[in-house]
Image 1 (tube, rainbow, N blue to C red):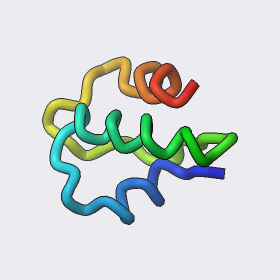
Image 2: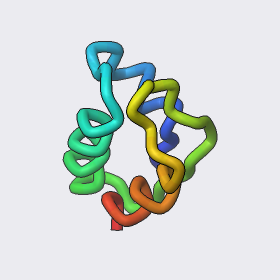
Image 3: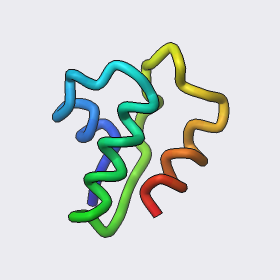
Image 4: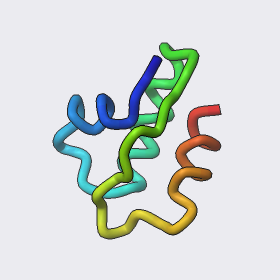
Length: 58
């Protein structure tokens, strides 16, 4: 299972929500499940951030 907190810890160079979406898109190729356990701390994180992360992973 892929946890969002794990993605962020493993990719400290990610500085925007859009960059985070790209990382999640890559990781979905090797993971079956995704758990959102933290809110991304980026200034550009939109209100619908959970929906966008889920849509990117599926």
